[in-house]
Length: 366
Image (cartoon, rainbow, N blue to C red; front, side, top):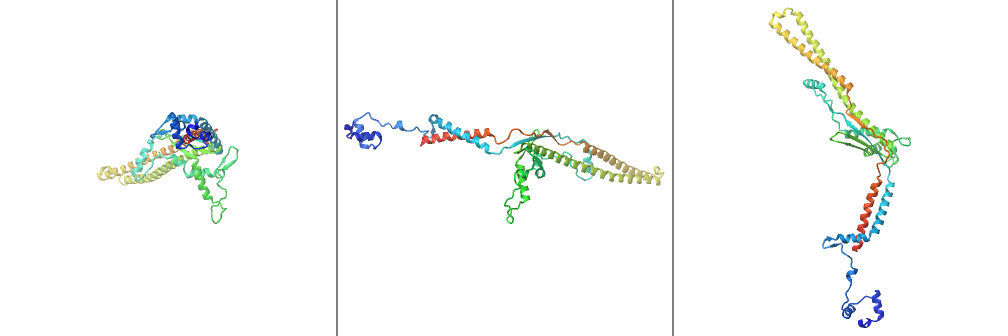
């Protein structure tokens, strides 16, 4: 073969081992001497994943099947790292209290009272007030009460939320006094942080309200959830009681005024009859007497109506039921709500699998 190609045996061996590049002239002589010789470029060429803009999924599957060991190892490493990283996050416990609104029943007893007040030219609000519970839950009033109160931890220690979150540490807030602690700024931070740990949802169809609190301590989480539910109930009850009290005061004042007017009209009628004992025989005096009697009857009717409404207002104030009822109190959570290690493992596994597959395909393209 070396003689046909007109090269030395050493050169041919170098060609075979790849130490020397084969020239074009030698390839032509090789083709002439051996007509059946063909360059086997196809054997060394890599299959194309995309051909004419179309993905060949068969090629993709073959590449991934050849790289399955790499894919499995990479996926396992990502899964392990993801699961391990979940231990670096703080544990949080979520407690939830559910409130159910009482039925909105119209108070028929106050229908006449509201009409009467309207006739007097004054406005009277209905007892049935619509409260936006999520706004009450997220109010600054409740947040400040929760921040200023001490809470019992699972260890039995009492602690304020500002201390729990380490917000009272000295920081460089003021330029003039770098070590001064600005209590107002700390308070605002605590309120914002408290709102971040509180969540409230309302079912528009059933009216069910769920208030949840998420803290690192399970006892604090449950206690604060119940505390918020209690504060919401108290606030709404207080507002309703204040409205009932306003109505009762208004009726009492009107009753006193009408009673004086009734006494005045009755005195006028009595004095008229004393001065005019034979008024029945005089048409003019009879007309005056009828007018005075009508005034007395009108004032008496208003007075009796106000008396009835005052009694109804007193009864309603005593038996007034709360707008919200606690359906389920928050219990101390046993299991943590976050971090969810299963979620970490699943997400990290998917990331590792996708990364290893893309890496295998990119290496094949190279």
